[in-house]
Length: 304
Image 1: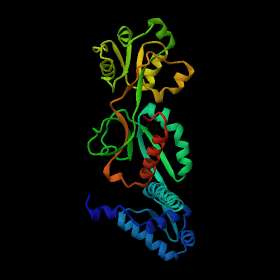
Image 2: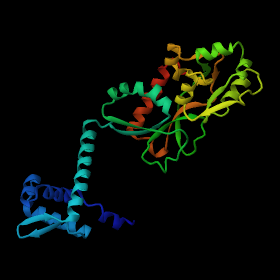
Image 3: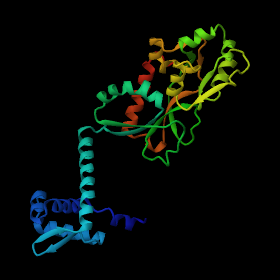
Image 4: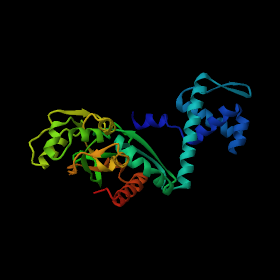
């Protein structure tokens, strides 16, 4: 669509406001009074809009006007668009640093760590709205233009984005108290006899853990799950032993639903990052959220 054609389909707000007022009131006179204009000025603006769109919006009968079918549909859309512009302008005026942040999150990180802290952020930044969407793997910001940023777990291996390190993590072999009692784990090689559970996005986690204990990879009988919430629940009900981040299972450890199979933690090779496309780097809600997230992570005693 060339520039000339695009301008045709982007009428000025003065034309749209005149049309919307006349459509809502059913009267050019009332619309003129509402907009503090003359009747002829409102009529002229409506005519200019019809000429610009090349569509008849009103059927005219002497001194009365009536929306055409096309005009009725257009009036609803224009009214909603003007309402959004008005609301956005009011919010911006009330809080220049406000706005919306559309953020992709990892499900368990979002529900266990981020969500409980968000109320504090929103109180500190009342003009900012955060919309959350779940994503498990890398995606293309170019095809998901509605998203401003994402929480990413992995290495610095997401091409075409900027990122800031949020936090690292430590994982432990965790299981139900009953399973630990059943197998009587005493040393690392004992885990090779038990069912092992892992998340499908961390295929090498158990191999890395056994290597850290100087043991040949014993993860051949590993069951894989697509989310941490699922693998954690499987560990809780006694299906097997799972390598789980300590900061995400604090509640289960405190209540005894999960226990440490062996006190042999492992520092994950990957980390949590906030990532965003370069063109969004100065987006004010993102800048504010980024500063808050990094400060919040730094103050978390479990953010190793």
